[in-house]
Amino acid sequence: AQSVTQLDSQVPVFEEAPVELRCNYSSSVSVYLFWYVQYPNQGLQLLLKYLSGSTLVKGINGFEAEFNKSQTSFHLRKPSVHISDTAEYFCAVRGLFGGYNKLIFGAGTRLAVHP
Amino acid sequence: KAGVTQTPRYLIKTRGQQVTLSCSPISGHRSVSWYQQTPGQGLQFLFEYFSETQRNKGNFPGRFSGRQFSNSRSEMNVSTLELGDSALYLCASSLGLSDYEQYFGPGTRLTVT
Image (tube, rainbow over all chains, first blue to last red; front, side, top):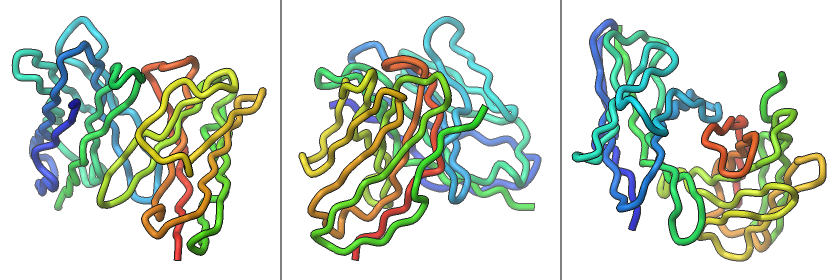
């Protein structure tokens, strides 16, 4: 079965420090990969996406992610975080699963940036 | 351009009742998808509508249904509500069917008592 695993449920980090949020997926078919951010009491906002081409993808707010096919990973990174980056981050995979084209989400990683 | 709007934002219902949630997509977007978000199950795909037809669906019971109108607005209906249906219901719109860039609304918080 297809799945998306976010290895850390919570990541505490100090302001201006680098951060990496990890995501692994399991799928034997071609998939497309996404990272979304959710601020409290809001919907989801697309940070970045990998559809094809360069494996290093740059997104909004200084985030980037690297697609690694051999390790089936799509980790999200930011070299220097701000207090305002405190939010929940979701990795997602879109593909044909069970005959339907679906977007499947990981459980989420809560990023807490401390001053 | 206005974003995706969902109404109502908050709703309290009793077990056994039914509920209808509404979603207005971004102007020009023809596809609408619905998701359920709960602390226990996370974000789960319900279904996707395009041109007034359900095109993709997740693994939810038949109590969950939806429809899309000719102006692309969509409604989601849950009948015979259960306590476990308490969740944040998110709607997302995109330009076309299975488009890879989805724009999410703020959600409707449903509480079933």
